[in-house]
Length: 268
Image (cartoon, rainbow, N blue to C red):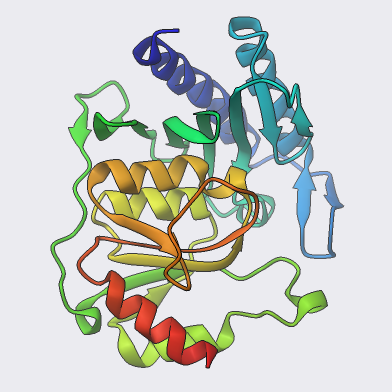
């Protein structure tokens, strides 16, 4: 398997799925709940995942899949695609134009490539393990992703999200948010973790944290940050590994220890 060709294919598939989502943004949504009352899925999430899996299965019939809407299939394969067909469903259902398509390929748990596509801005972020990370807008030239040079947390713009099961678990992220409100320049909550991670890789955000992310949320975005030269760990400083639900911190690298210290204080 040629990883460069595979990455080009993944980008094309993400763009095709993104076109489907873009066309559906202004259309009526059929909304269902999943694990909780605030964990939504629309017919466009499902249509996007069907499209992605159909295209990938045609090219790689022996590969496995972990998709947000359809779960895991062909789990014995060493090659696994992590698919979030619509990251930012709540935004999308309300007509907010901030959402993404996220695809990542791993081999025996090691990420090989990642693609995050922003349909409304027509920006495609992608990374290849050991080779770097780039962004391409429309049909333009690719540009390398470079994290921000910010070294002081007090001058940093951060981003976060809130667990969709917070009403059940009581894990709200509010203590951590309050701590960062005092420690950082500003905090944003944009609603698409994959795209927020891409923005850390691109230097548009200095750091990001969340207390509960699924593998399809972070698999592509984490590789973008790592290949761009940023840093990703769990919120307690434990090294990152592609493994189910995780609490994650991603940063430009310069402010990482400062972020971990704030999180440790908020958790104590």
